[in-house]
Length: 244
View 1 (tube, rainbow, N blue to C red):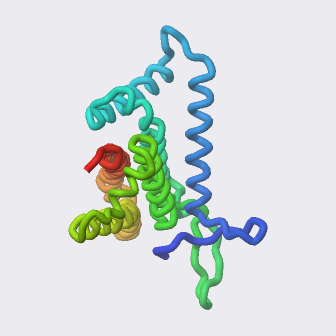
View 2: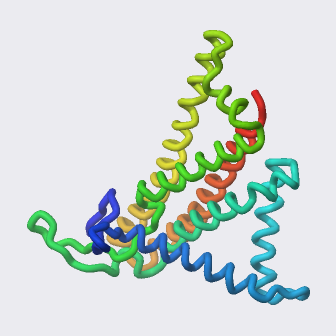
């Protein structure tokens, strides 16, 4: 049993290392694009079971976002980003719990020892993935803020020279923007990685029956973590698009 904090390299593509977390993230991305493309190709007035389920999911997310923003027009503007973040994070969390994710891999010799390198690993169990999603989210927050208030008004939140107190508060605001990236990244990574380690240890000590309760717990945690990530992103967008 080998537990690695960092994602393992599976192969190289034109000299660029491809890790097992990247592979699973690509699979999740392709799956989302495929489902959306197929489900929106033939929309019907009387929806099928699949269309009805997808409409229920989207409508529930839309209503939840609208409860936070409290403005339908703004909700429609931010909803595509929030829904994408939620679905990508949640599916990445859940895909990492599928049978075969972890045990299936290739054996390699590292430092004189033969270890199993899994072919697949949840993207959110890799700090690189959570950091990338966090950076994209916070960049989007700044873009929405500039589009809502203008560049000069938004930048004054961070660089205000009207007095020493205003300047100090602005620097604190700037630091908090970077702190949000760190908080986003480590919260999601820590919860998902710890859950996977827990499942590995329980399965190693008491296989078959014992891991089932923890598996259902991790399914719930995966949903909650995706929801928390998306809702915090929405709250940050709302706060950034308002004046002081």
